[in-house]
Amino acid sequence: MTELELKEYLVKNYPQENEVCEWKEYSNLKHVVKGHEGDDIVSYISAISNMNGGSLVIGVKDGTLDITGIQDFHSYTSVSIKSKLLKHCINLPSEGLEVEEYVTDDTNKTVWIIKIPKHPLRRPVYVHDKAWQRHGDSLEELDQSRQNAITDEIGVVADWSAEIVEDASIDDLDDEAIAKARKEYVKRNPTRAEDEQTWDTITFLNKAKLTRAGKITRTALILLGKEESEHLLSPYVVKIRWSLKNLQNENKDYDILSMPLILSVDKLFNKIRNIKYRFVREGTMFPDEMLRYDVFNIREPLHNCIAHQDYAKCARIEVVEYEDDHLVFQNSGTFLPESVEEVIAKDCPESVYRNRFLVEAMRNMNMIETEGGGIKKMFKNQKTRLFPMPEYDLSDGKVKVTIMGRVIDEEFANILLRNPELTLHQVMLLDKVQKKKTLSDAEIALLKKLKFIEGRKPNFFLSDKVVKLTENEKLKADYIKNKSFGDDHFRKMIIEYIKKYKRAAKDDITALILGLLPPVLSPMQKRSKVTNLLSSLRIKGVIEYSGGFWMLKK
Image (cartoon, rainbow, N blue to C red; front, side, top):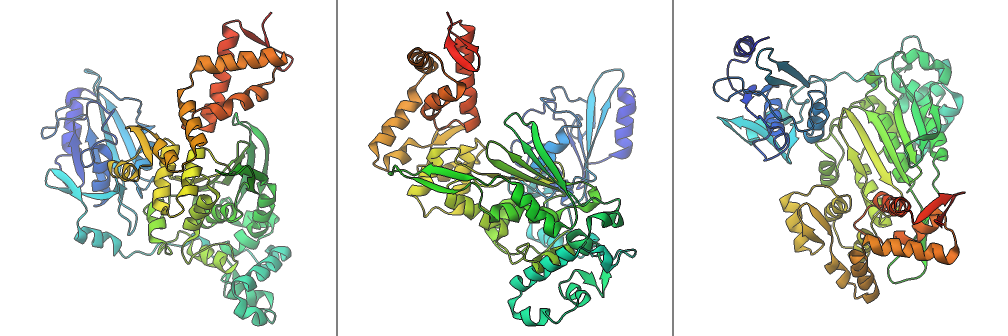
């Protein structure tokens, strides 16, 4: 359509700015998708969603609807921006979020209309750690009355997991799974141990909240159903895919596990290579030895995936094991609490669950924590091991949890060792520094007050001042020395090493260099650094690669 036709369309369908509609010029998207709080795109999305949903029109003059067009899209497209909005807008539903693009035929001006869904039941949409609302021509933090109106909403959402499967019978349940369920039920409910021995199968299933009046529910099939009975849940998918990937993100092995999930979780647990990890603590030559992954930190996210999966999405639960020592758990469906930080801060059970019947059954099967603290316990376990904090990615309508099985920054580990009194919140901020995450001004101020960071925004690193507090002069000297090494120094080291031993495998060079690289670099950056050093020497004609070894070029 022409520019005139597009304006007529906008005037007809979006005639005025109000609580459900906003016009913004935003000719350059680089700094306005998430920029200054209260005046960026995500703030307006929060404000509109926290009413009844609506639309944000971008590329038009505020007040007149004259079409100015978006002139600089930065790296965004009308498709890619959706995942960015979901990442920054906590609780924003993915369903109903759409970006319509209109380009005028005569003037080639682009207008976006962002269709914004209403907030979820009883859950405001948060941006910049605040829930927003419109007040006049500007935005402000959600006032108490509107906050109460949202959190006190009454609504009954159908529980998919509680539905009875009419064609299913007790014969569709797996005997071994039922025996396992009985055993775990007694562990969770020891006072009922004697009674449990007198119950027949149907009585047990009813008591454990797996069936309803003896009728088979979707929950009973998910946890206890025979694999050949999975057609009873069709078209819904109840499967867990385990994948093993190498450093190049290539699949090395995989398996797909099906019902009954109460048995499949043990099979998956046994597939994960939870080998020994050694870490030399400051002030000793003797390493600590532990399993890479705390057992709870494998089972908790896996069981959470089962409990909170949106089975209507017909997607598999994904568990990916990477050779460089981290695990990723992913389920479909949005994260129901406001944020991970909110869950840890509250440290109490959630009031809303997607699959309420399934969650209760899993609680009775000793599979899930509903008394609160499961997620917080994962963070505490990582802190105790000096490992990075669990990482949650809530974008694109999925929940993805990453668990690291090693130290990625020795300075982070040393700070935790020297300061056991640190709160979990403070440790999470330090974790953001070692992972090069963006810090808010308040977070920066707190870490600087504690003298835990140095550098200039946004390039902060864990502070040299912390090293001084240890009075470990050797560590201090090594730290300062490592910061000053340049590429020429490392190239000379590589050449001298090859001269001495005539040839060297890449692993030899890596062992030589890796420990001398600055601790602010991630393990992946360190490995890339070694590769780049070798490549630069090869390009200069100093060394060559042959038969699996690096040698001086003749």
